[in-house]
Image 1 (cartoon, helix red, strand yellow):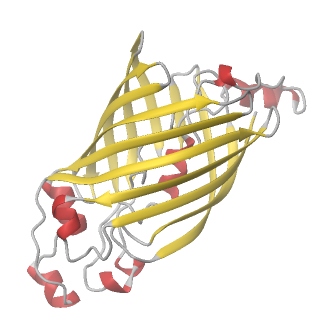
Image 2 (spheres, one colour):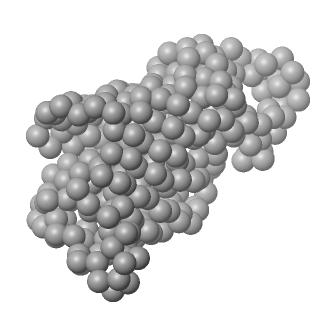
Amino acid sequence: MFAKMDSGLFAGRASLAVMAILFSTHSGRALAADAIAVNSDDFIPPPEPSRFGRIEQKLSDWHVVLGGGAIIVPKYEGSDGFKIMPVPFVTATFLDTVTIDPTGANIAVYEQGPFEFSARLGYEMGRKEDDSDHLRGMGDVDMGATVGAKAAVKFGPAEIFAQLDKTIGGSDGLEGRVGIEVTQPLSQSLMIGASASAVFADENHMQAYFGVTPEQSARSGLARYDAGAGLKRADFSISAIYMLNQNWMVRGEAGVGVLLGDAADSPVVVDKIQPSGMLLVGYRF
């Protein structure tokens, strides 16, 4: 996942953008939580926008990052099969307040000392029964819009956060996440990070993705199952960002999610352990 920059290196949470593009596998939520926060002051200073004149000046003002790469993820949340997907993305942040990326928008509402509060607008990708033979007969979970909020407190290189997202349409569910993200620069060119988080969901979300109704059971052959609200999964990740020069950067990440509670016991789930990996290259203006 590419990460948020406080003043210009990586604008916004590009990792969320990456995950949202592909997340028919994970109900529209990032497999390993939000991106790891990184302070651009720890890296090479932003380049002077000169190559493309006024156009690049505007892109620089908006902290635009363009890039792409590849990611390997489970075919759906709970699958034991994997798919490798190309991942293009673009993010832009204006005045360190509004971040726009393929997931939607994040708007900084309040910031005082180490405390931050932001509003979130986005979407949940849903799930297709064609994602796996194991889902045949289960039907699709439609895509839906999401609205939410996030609160975070920073302690040196660590950030503790809590976020809540409501889906309008689709699963019509509510999903929350609490966790910690830590980053540490090893040099002016290299930053490493780690994160851990827990995901909770209401009954609507859990039933949409892990429940099996009598009708679905008859069509799919899976046992009937009622999934209740509660703890859904735990996520862990490690990452590294390397600046090749003032503009080009590479990010690698490895993560694992562990399904818990009613999600883990669902007949929809083939494997409770959900690993993922990603390699991205980005260019910042």
